[in-house]
Picture 1 (cartoon, rainbow, N blue to C red):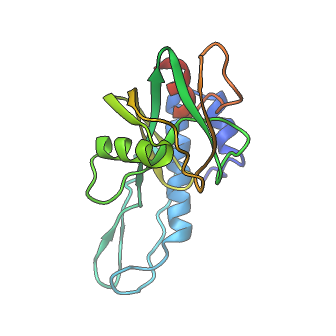
Picture 2 (cartoon, one colour):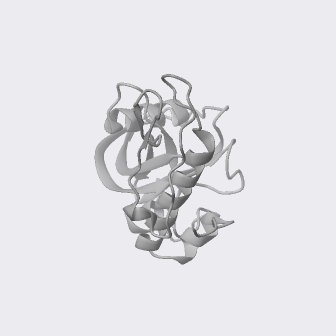
Length: 196
């Protein structure tokens, strides 16, 4: 079995989409084996799944030997959004992660929400802004630890910036030909900034 890649973010920046998919899946399954060791229904120990070099062929399920409950890896759906206004895009510095770079607004989808509802809520909560013309752009598995990033574009519709101070430290409108330090290639955030 192949050893885990030490710096998966660096790997994503230098490899193509198919290679990144394989490594993201392998990492997600490896972490699932480590973290979910007991059946959540009866408490029996779950057998780990073997992860071959080509993890894309591995069935992603584990059956409890005691009660028969079938377990699947956890996936946490998130939205990430490129907001546009008058030829510029909104980028923010986040407090809890990658604090030295500017990135797109992002957040988890909450129970009962559609992805589009999460787009509107996250932007409103973190920046105070309203958006319109929400359009799906693409997706990426992001195993840090279990995210599925759903990328969207949206147009500014109104409001004044009011930062959610426990989430963001700075926010600003930037031209794509004069960008601050931002995520590197291999991330859906980079693709949103450069390709949307």
